[in-house]
Amino acid sequence: MKKKFFQQFHFNWNKVILYIRNHFCIEGKIDPIGIIYLIGIQELGKGKNRFFNREDKINILHIAICRILEPFGYYVFIGRDREGWPHYLLIKNLPLLNNEEQSFLIKKAIIRYMSDEKIFDEIIM
Image (cartoon, rainbow, N blue to C red; front, side):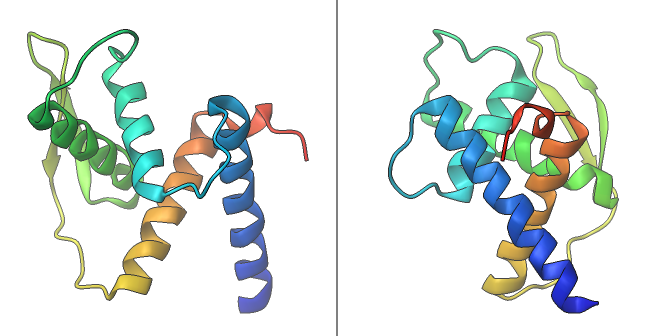
């Protein structure tokens, strides 16, 4: 059972990597933080032809983390401010995780986001 779960996990993670590689013309290693940044831009809805300062970029990463961890019960979306930035409320503290567990949770959350947003429908394997 566990082996099948991890096989499916790796299959789905490879679908995420393939999607990013094909849609953003990336040839090198794809970092999960880069994917999180792209999710934040998507959720913000203001990424096209816009300059973001360092603080904006940190906030974009925060938006993405909140959004991808929302289905796991850690955050809840509370609305957008006047400038259109989404805001989330922490409703459950994240557990203490080692680096491997944290990486697994983030990748699992990215996979779920891509699935929920029907992005996987565009992937041909």
